[in-house]
Length: 250
Image (cartoon, rainbow, N blue to C red; front, top):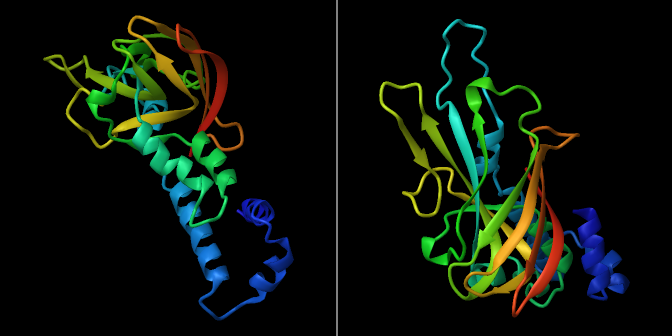
């Protein structure tokens, strides 16, 4: 946060008064507003939870018990794309002008941290692509790291602001097959969905295709964090783009 504070001070031309401001201990002036904004930013960035994707990558071992069962025993990870202009403007573009201050350096950090939230199914623009299915009962160390290709086909003319990841689980070892989905077209759950905002706003027409891949792996320094790399490209009538974006789930 210290580096961000320094960058915000420089961006807004406050270097001449920064030392004076930071020496203010009591008072209700600009420093308090400035620190309040930094605290708000820290709380916002720290509030993003790992619920959706992390639950996919944590696993249990049958504990070396004969005929042991892990439930749920099967999980599938899906990806789709959504229109989300209003929310993105409110939560991401917001940092361009925070009560007159340019805090766009925090915007870059906010873009890298996926948002766990409930997505309205009306926002879905493409099909839902199955990225990977895992047999949880047989997972071993290293299975949580993978690269999976995807192909998303537009179901209508619209704009795309984000990818959305979610998972389904199945209880195949029960006497009756059962399970549930955390997807936006299903009943809302505690895990919600994971929204990965794009740097580009994609203009897509019905039938056009976004092709790409998603790479997921535990962070090397802190395995509780998840590093995500998304490569995507679109070659459409109104939009041509090819990009690689990096995210970190904390």
